[in-house]
Length: 228
Image (cartoon, rainbow, N blue to C red):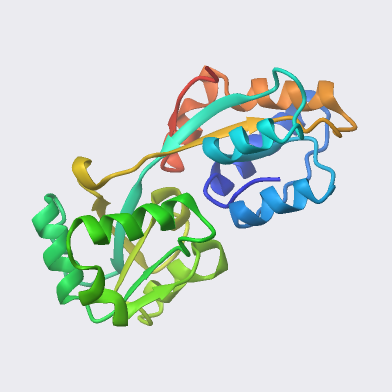
């Protein structure tokens, strides 16, 4: 069970894992808060992949197997437009501020459901434009069609984890948020204490965190962190 950000990378890696081991991998993707709640409610999974802060919370709640936690990769927040649109200058905080103030509509993840959405809300306050853009904000997670709204022209500007938008047709990535506004989401993984196949789950985590998978993660917009 995984949040949506690693979907492109995991789909490829799970297929490679199946071919090399003979194990069958069933992938479930959902908003990260929903994954956390489903596991807490007793739904069984052999592996969970979520932002590190949520994995930490699950670990403290006692729902994870001992010493199973692993850091996988990190991904940054990007600004996106409809393909063919004039690309905004977002190389500086002032450029981002100007772009958002001029945009007719802005879509980004729900801050109550995702760490990236929460960061964007804080960023708008940091730029001093939270009240100015409030009326044109659309809160919709990428996995629920938020990124597709930009492709369809239903929102002029989108801000999502870059891995969530690369597979979406009709979208152009203007770039990542500049360093002073950026917040990389570090994805971690763990094996729930209720896993029915902990050995296979451990093999899967070793496989997807191995150095040989770095290019697959990079192609999906992530930077592999090596399982440390």
